[in-house]
Amino acid sequence: MEGVMELCDWRRRCDVSRCWGFTAVSRSRSRCPVSVRIDRRSSATSDRSAGRQKLDPLRPLHHLHHLHPPRPLHPLRPHRTASIFILFVLFIILILFILILHLSPFHPPSSSSSSSSSSSSSTMSGSKEEEDRKGSGEWREAFWNPRTHELLGRTATSWGLILLFYLVFYLFLAGMFTLTMYIMLLTLDDYKPTWQDRLETPGMMIRPKGDQLDLTFSVSNTESWDDFVQNLNSFLSTYNDTFQVQTNDNCPPDQYFIQEDSAEVRNNPKRSCQFNRTILDECSGISDRFYGYDKGQPCVLIKLNRVIGMLPGKDGQSPYVTCGAKREDADKIGPLAYFPPNGTFNLMYYPYYGKRAQVNYTQPLVAVKFLNASLNTDINVECRVNSNTLSPGSERDKFAGRVSFKLRINDK
Image 1 (cartoon, rainbow, N blue to C red):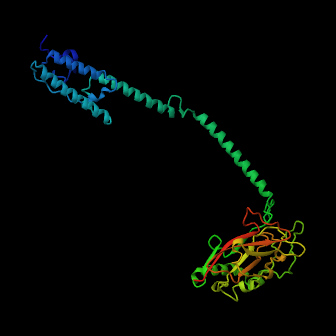
Image 2 (tube, rainbow, N blue to C red; image 1 turned 135 degrees about the vertical axis):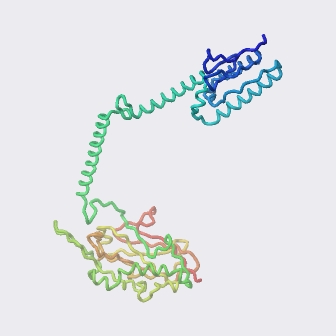
Image 3 (cartoon, helix red, strand yellow; image 1 turned 90 degrees about the vertical axis):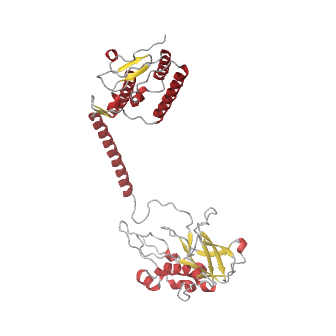
């Protein structure tokens, strides 16, 4: 039945009146909003649209807080096509508005808009706020519960007891660690290791070392070998004769210089034997300040690593050094000269008592001079120590009792 109905009855519905699916919101409580005359069938269509909107479970209704009060509608003529078109446009606008609110962050409504919200949206938004408040309340109580006075689930007494337990526990561990370290330090000697686990054969090293034991230089280019000369000068500075005479003793050769302690009395500091720089003769840097590098006859110094208490020979036979080229370079190395003669480490420099007990100890050296090495080619050289008490070096360790390096002398 076609008819016109009054959509607002302020006495019955207070702020919000609803008739045939259309909700009219009043800005003022003094009077009812303008009445709207609408076709029953059109209003039914609108009611169904609004019903779908209200029953949508995926979209909360608190976005209606942002809606402005609808403008009063003029009476519509019963024209079905125009009504459908208008409802369709309104439906599209409503869908777009819902999508915009869904994609944009939610902001709490202002006081003016909250006064115009509907009863249904207020109920649902209130329930959501209550759930959020309940969740935040549970989180706060998990951190601090004002009723039981618990912090993170523990009372002040519980926290005090557990902190006291861990304090005593870690103090006990620290005390145990300190005690064991103190007992271990009592077993150590300041001058020699209590337990000494070493290789059967000490290692060897050369000077100058170059770049990864690679001695490459050009005779005509002084800059290529100037670093080698400076390295040898610096290394041999403590071997000067004047310094050795002042600090070390002139010991008898070919016998060990043993300095034992007397019972509980330590014989420290222990004395050392002289190793004068002049023993190296042509490789001392005195008669030839360039160590033969300017003539293509370089000198290489070889030293045996220090080992406390090592006795490297017996029956008066000192260990000695021999150098040679690898098998593929045997015809390139040429004749060699050793300084001191026979390339020996004299027994008078042994045993070694350690850096603290033997402060001025001077390590013995052997110098090898390459007299006629092939030019413009790589020569792989290996030097070994030979002794009647030291076992030959292992093939797995290229520094045990031997040292290998590459020598290349260029003429330009």
